[in-house]
Length: 497
Image (cartoon, rainbow, N blue to C red):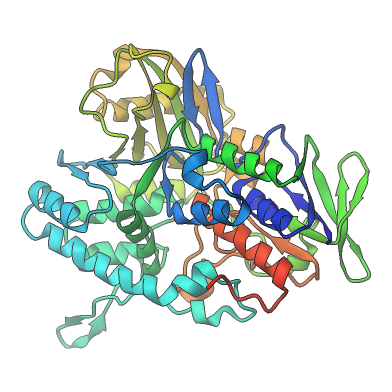
């Protein structure tokens, strides 16, 4: 079997490595940093433990399949998964509060009716029904199959937008997520709820195609799951599975170039000048002309900088409230202003803030303390100088002040504040501006697709969040499965059936 070099040790890259090793290949992973996991980082200090990336797992079936295909121990033997219920609580600008139950369509409908008024639940349910149709239409080509050479099948938006007649004019229908909020949901709070999903994935609801409706559909249909010990525990489990399958890891090894020979990928060159031969190369980092020459000229090979994350980790005195929920979203009072700033390279003065309060003893030194994480989607480093100490401190204060709506008395409980910005993300991952990749979306003439897993250079493949089908733990895991299938079965591979 072949020797395979994998660049990067994010979830997608490790998922590919484990599957390829099981198929009999000799796999070596080269990671520029000193650890694995990519966006699934962990910060620990004085008994407080924080996730620095996603806090919940969606579509756990992706990792159940990985563990079934790569060993005898299933996923639930390696990590403890519990459904987050409620899945989320939402605080709107007008003071309305609603808690949405996990994976319960009837429960969500009832909660929205109770909080927003009769009819709100039905409008949201109708939207999810249409989103379900979009899911059925696009699931296989968008998530479960390699991106075709001609991705025209994904250029058309699969969301069946409602056609509204206008007097003496032709019918009109929503073409963007913001349009769905305005035309189909007819309530600024429901529109804010929908916009919040887009923003959390780094998408501008004014530009994201209506097909982005798949994102709330997936969360509310398949559920939100908490991994005991934090999401980093999932990265730990995947890493351990790789080791069990004899995958070799080389940390502190920055790959600067994919080596070509006789018209195909033949290995990697490291920053220290050494080279390692390989029959196949898998790029699990953001593609660049040096790492992924086969993507040169691809319209999505070097997408514009997408937003990053501003994270505030709070070590608090005092026990977690009995009525606290895992995830609370404090919505902005001015959505258009926030979107203008985030996607215009400026600081949003009134950001949407996600407050995460895990009910997990592993995240705190004892029951008399609590670890709380605040996150906002922000413009990337570069347009905004996130290394500026004054800006960092001021903006952390802005997030904490807004989060106090979700955690009463927050300011008086803070023992220590630690900050992570897109500048740290860029330094640790190499992603320009600290950008975080969004999931691929159908529609918009293919403008929200990412580079395919196979490239024009034979023997070179792309995995992870910067490749099809995009960012997020579930999508990254899917990319690993697709790459492994292409390597093992060849270009005839069409996805698992």
